[in-house]
Length: 173
Image (tube, rainbow, N blue to C red; front, side, top):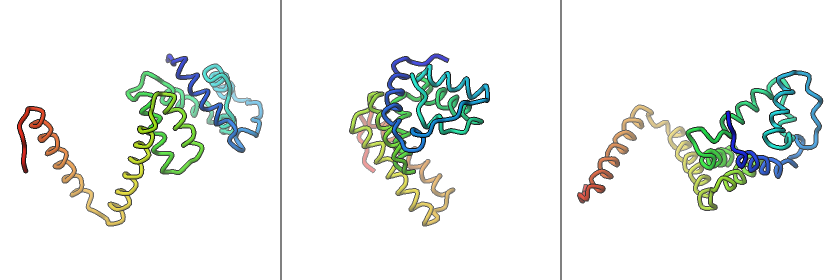
């Protein structure tokens, strides 16, 4: 799998900047004995230029899998989502968890991938809107089957309206 040098440098910079994160950054990891962990650490260093503390804090038995996931999804420029989109999603989720480490990382990485301040604000606002409506829908026990039918109807009508507006046909309902 090929990774963008620019992308790896950007991520390494963002991770490096967040490297002073408490326990993970200040606690040295013991030398790994597992060959897959050793290989993962070598690949992390080759890709990012260093092994950030939070990777060292991960249990040795799982680091190869954790790094594989991170590299093949988050760092991979050949996925369905752009790097900017992935980082904006990460920021939105981080804001809802909430996780200060993740907010810092995903904001820096989103901006490094070209996100504007307005895009980062909108991602966080969308997370808040989703959380708001989820709270209401679940708390009020809105029937899921009815909700799905109504959602499908609204989206179908919006698509029809958009189609007629594109064709220059005025609609009044």
